[in-house]
Image 1 (cartoon, one colour):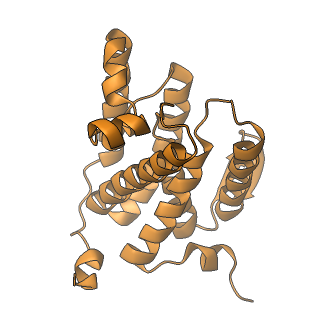
Image 2 (cartoon, helix red, strand yellow):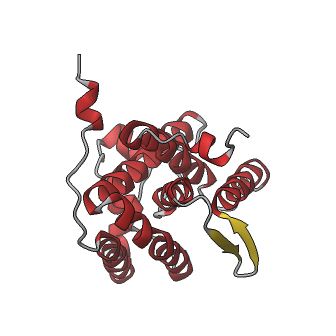
Length: 212
């Protein structure tokens, strides 16, 4: 039986701008896939390819690829806004672990569900699952911070997370052919929640809904 303390063992604090490194990798991967579209079938996540052809690397590469510039821009803008402060709070090592595990976990959940529901040939791509996890963690660590939704509506960070999650649930069931992986976004929030419990003993639900 594995020692649970191993899973909770903290990484020594250091800061080396991992957020900027992640953004640079995402931009580089976008340029590569734009210059060589033939690589997309190898880098983007397709459940059938992973399960039938053992293309397990796609669970990692998919989160560094994006379908278009707008997709890349808004994900990287969100990662920069929330990731830099969160990285300083967590430390770069913990932040990288949190980001990568959240992204891989979101991809894994999406892969299994899509394959089971007959969508095994549909590609999944983007950093959104990991970015949603970052947003959740930011709200858990900085619950009193105000976030301006669409640059206009000010909300406390936990409220913003709940609004975004509700929007994702709504569109997941009402806009099935949008091409947006809403399930991956929600899975990122779920994996991020579990990681906060495991690594930091922070229950985001209790932070969002404190007892009076």
